[in-house]
Length: 390
Image 1 (spheres, rainbow, N blue to C red):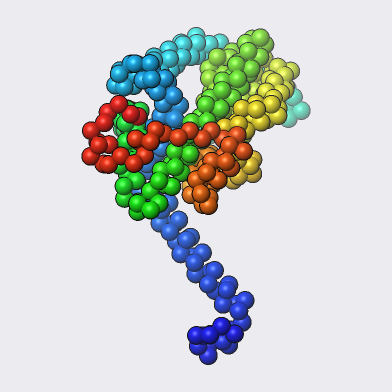
Image 2: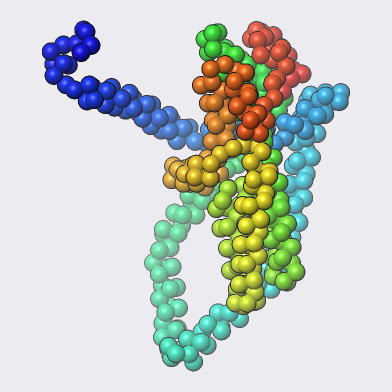
């Protein structure tokens, strides 16, 4: 029996004492996590843009560094990279919207014919409904819309508020992205000055390891999304499905939500194929999407994503589900990048020494890139005056 225990403590079995000790510690950790999530939720308008800017910085930082190392001034490199990215995205969106406007009338005509076909089937088919019953159902639907007109109006107001928040968030993303690309390493060095000096280098190593894993994740996700969009878009174009390019663009955007995004957006392609071309083309489109997903899961993910960040598929699914429950679509989008960052950062923090941490990351094919020594231990006043590092 351990010395120093009271009579009451001795009356409790060691198993119960250990369970109680673990329980209160776990409760404290759980309470800290709840408080953190509550704070993030309250500051969602700030946290989400900063997180998105960090992900975009992980995508664009290699290009900025490449220009910087070839003699282009840091500010000019940031401006050139951002303008090129905005021009590329703007050009793609303009082309997609133009194609959508061009193809929408044909799709609407196909939908009208499909509706008429369904109406004729309801009348002449096995249900043998009368035109009066169908007309009554249509009138009931219109009346339901009128009865909920006030609720729909409130929804429009809330949509306008959401648009305002989106514009504000986009501006914050842009400004944060500019500063991260121009002086992100100095910002990180300055922030970590609050950490005790004995563990400061370890924290900086963890942050760098997490960020470079994030770079690998974003690169791999971009490549996988691009291949998904090209494969599905090419198949839709060959079959003559309307709006093939906008649907391929949706697949590209959806692929940034791992495992489920491309499937959901691909399902929209199946619906369009069903409306425009019928069941045969819808089944062919479904087969195309399944084939592309199989290639992604068995070829692209192991070769591309596996080299960037090693995360078990179950962890990915649970992260997406948790992010979706906590923060909706944005939570599902940010869950895996956050997990990729923490996966490498925590492994460096808990390693016995930095060399062992680096060896573990290299063994799992994760990129480990050290910043120059002058970015690690420079004083805060020097870090603030330097503008050449990102």
